[in-house]
Amino acid sequence: MKNFKKIIILCAACVLAAGAVKAETGTFIGRGKAVVINKDRGTATKIAYQSAKKKALTEAMRSFIYQGRKDEVNFNRKKPQLLKGPFPYIQSERQVSNNLQGKLLNIAVEIKVDMKGLERFLGKEGVLVTENKQKKKSEFPDIMVIISEEISGTINTVPYTTALISDYLIKKEFEVIDENIVRKNISQEQAVQAVSGNMAAANAVALQYGAGIILTGKTAVQQSSLKFGGMQSYGANITLRAIKADTGDVLAAASADGSFPHINAMTGSRKAAEQAARKAVQKIVKDLENSLESTSNGIIITINPVNYKQLAIFKKILKRDFQDISGMKQKSFISKVAKLDIQYEGGIAYFADEVALKDFGTFTLEVIQFSPGKIDLKLQMK
Image (tube, rainbow, N blue to C red; front, side, top):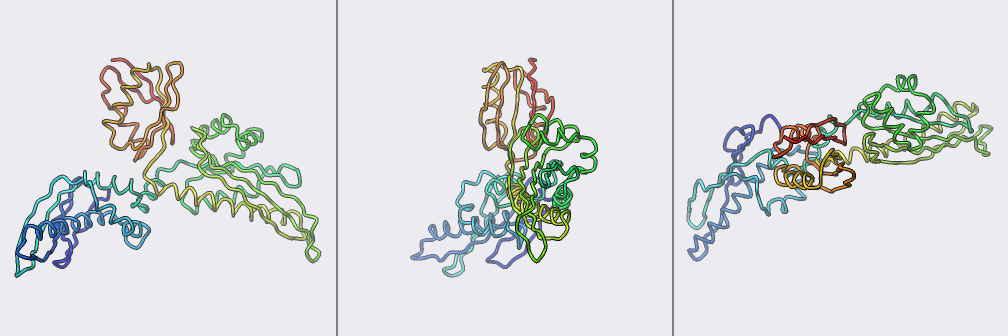
C-alpha cells in the first residue's frame, strides 16, 4: 500500500476525495446527476445515487493507479466490470446531499473503503501491474547462472555466455550471484549435473550460495562449412531454463541460434555464442517479468507429521481465515507427510509469519524453513 493518497479536487461533475486517507481506510465522495421526468424523483434519485457511487469508487481505485502506464490501460479496459460489484471492500456508504434545481437532481454519496481490501481486489484483477512488478521484483530471489559450453566438441571452462547473461539480468534489476565465486567453488561435474536437470545437484549448489533461482543453460558452437569472403562461419545454439531451486518448477525456458563469420576461430565462436545467448535471455527475462505482473505466488507447503484429520482441519482453516489464499490443491499425503500447493496473494515470508502465529486449536505449526517457493512445517500437539 502506498504511504499516502492524493486528495484530488475536481469540478462538480467529478469525484472529490473527502480528506486525507488513513492507513487502512479511505473516504471518498462522488457526485451524480439525473433529470426528474414526470415528477418521478424516486427513479431519478436511484440513477443519480448509482452514478455518484461509481464516481466515488472510480476515484478510490484510481488512487492506486500509476498514470500513463500499463496500469491505467488495464484499469480503463476493465473499469466497467470492476464497477459492477459486489464491493466487499466498501465499509460504509451514505448519501450526504440531495438537491433539486429545476428538473436536475444533484446527489453526493460518501463511501468509506478498506484500502487494503481494495488493493487486494485490484491486484487479483490484474490492474496493478507496475506496483506488482516493483514489489515482486524486490522480493525475487537471487539468480545463479550455470552454463555448460562446448566449442567444437570441447568444454569451454570459462563460458562466453555466462558474463553476457549475468550482465543482462543485472541491468534488468535482478540480483545475480557473482559468476567468479560460483566458478571457483563448484566442480565442473556439479555444473554439468545442474545443467542436465539433476535437481538434487542444482538444489545443493543453490542452497550453498543462497540462490532461489538457477538459470541453467547449454551452449554448443560449431564451425560451419560455409565461408564468407575468406572468413569462416561459426554457428551456435543455446537452451536456457529458469528453475526454482527449492521445488524444481520451470519458470521460463528458451532456445536460440546465433551465427558469426570471422577470420579468427575464437572471436567467431564467442560472437556466435553471445548472439544466441542474448536472444534466449531476452525471452527468459520477458517471461519472468510478465509473471511478476500478477499478485499471486505459488507456494508449496509440506507438513510433517500429520494425520489426515489434522490435515483436513488445517485446510479448512486456511480457506476460512486466510483471505489472501486464492487457490489450493492437495499434491500428496504419504506416511504422515502432506504436500499442498497454494496460490497466495502476497509474499511468502508474510504467509509464513501468519501460519506461525495462527492458533489451529489442538495443534500448532512450527516453520522449520522456507525458501522462495516452499515452506516446511512441523505439526506439534498442544
